[in-house]
Length: 269
Image (cartoon, rainbow, N blue to C red; front, side):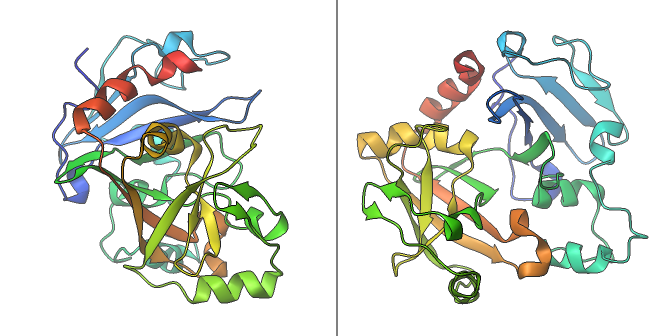
């Protein structure tokens, strides 16, 4: 099987490759297990190398052979069921919150923007990291937005403060697309030693880097490599906590170095 990052990634939504994440029952960690791609005509699903060695993992529904490359002219049922039904009364609102046109948004575009999951789901998809002028970049939904209002945590910059619900909403209401965010490592997180937070320029914590992505950026932060973030989209409370903020990370690490680590990432689970 070729490197999982060899497929060309363009800016067009239809040409974006998606990393498929699965939640490990015992640790609750979201672990990369496969790659879903669409070239505008054909959908393809491949498992990542070494996925057979991931503790507790079982083949996904409809993809029993871990070595096979699956292809289809239609979106595979496992992922199709994670796309909003156009007849849902909240379809227009939710699709608009994803920065898509409700009149023309395709199932693939919805997957790319939404991650194809709801809170508590054990499967999620997310756009692949892609090469950039400074190294690599990746767009993802911020995690743990509401959690930070309920608990003070220690970071390399000190302790965060507690927020009331109203204070948190005031902070989120002040965020605009294009706004830069700092990425800061948390200290003493027993659940995820690589945990990182997004901070505004006013030093307000507004979410976590998703665990799977933090695992990739952690070596960069420890080594002094540039890791910065920019807000792509901020949604209101009606969007649900898992869709509150879409962020793009820009990392100064060599794309080749990232590719090497991601190809073997499943060895560590």
